[in-house]
Length: 424
Image (cartoon, rainbow, N blue to C red; front, side, top):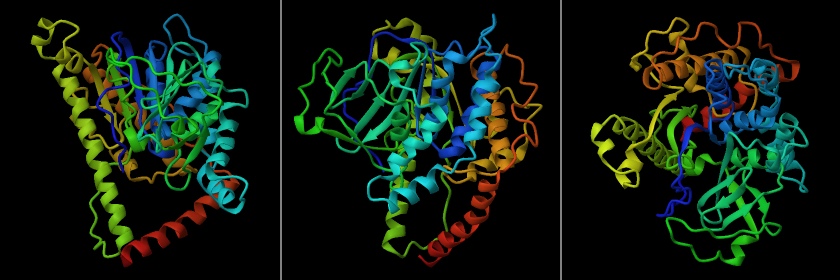
């Protein structure tokens, strides 16, 4: 499922940020995986050095809490937040017990006066705080929450300075609930989607893109935005930062592609597989393009080109990528003293927004910590010492009564889904 990409890049800017971070989608699986990577970035003093954080879907839940908590972090002389566990990780672990998907979908279907997306906003508000607002986010780093606008077919971005859509323009200094931005970014279709955002109170303005000012938007498009998961447009969350950063770190908690022996005889299952195949191809192409850019940075002939050169801007991007399904042995910094071979199987966890299990929660965070450490020490700074202590100790995460009930009901739901799939 892919949304069209305008030829002109809305995010293009001549100025470049030093260091950016992109957090992919993938539900709670990605949220927890990214939390481990954020722990490692803080441990080496790089969290404070970030100029921008772009996120989609599950990555936006992790980024949203970080944005809401940023002013409470206490950084020491080395740039390490000494209270990162209390201010951030402990809250995220508590939230990971909450079933956003089941409760939001159930209530949204049963009650005609609300929707699953509106109920999801309430859940995220519990995590972020009732007073969390885009206009209260820090100036640095810039937090960019990405959603997909089904009305325009473009990326819809939320940040402190503005909300924006290439076909609509920019509205500056938005007064908008942070939970709405996170819910729009994580509006997994079709169950938690769409989130309908009333745009009539905003003043969108067209600004020059590559020296050309687009025509004003059709007034009909400025009435509301019909928003779905940011991963529909770009599940890696890199689009806002590709042309803006000198160095880009990409954390990917998205599920890898898996083969299937199903006959796909029913039209519904066949159509879903076609959509999934198309989506996977788009992600693979974007991922390969990203890695090609990183590799191209090592070409010494780039230094002979002026900074304004299109080739210099495209292949002058330094960075690294780590994914939940990455083979850790492929990194030059391998082996890692804390790595466990079974952690790669965590990529097979479904894209859910409910408690994934005590051991799975622990392992996802620790795996994100280890694989991000390998990527950073392999391609960004080889002088960094390897991580020596995992963020989450065994037995720290314990299931609550409500999560135990969810865990017992889930296998029945999954078996029913697999039975239906097998018949197709």
